[in-house]
Length: 69
Image 1 (cartoon, rainbow, N blue to C red):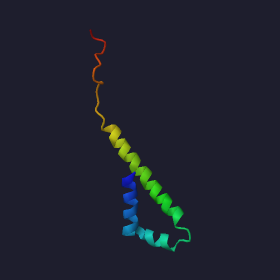
Image 2 (cartoon, rainbow, N blue to C red):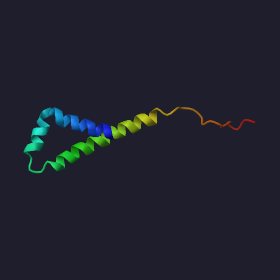
Image 3 (cartoon, rainbow, N blue to C red):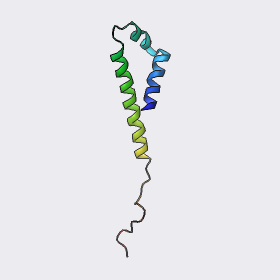
Image 4 (spheres, helix red, strand yellow):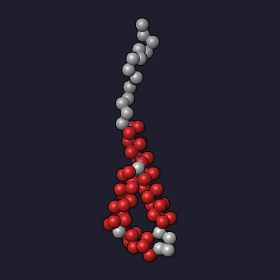
């Protein structure tokens, strides 16, 4: 989620698409800014969680003998 906040901040600092200018000229800039930060944080947070789950080792848990005696 921290990566999403950093990405949203970089979008605003770089003024991509005039985003920073639009927020500055808006009468209520907090709602769109919240939506931008929340969307980026959730998207990149979900991405990092998916990478972590898919990176788990595949195989049987240690100590399991599959019923063999």
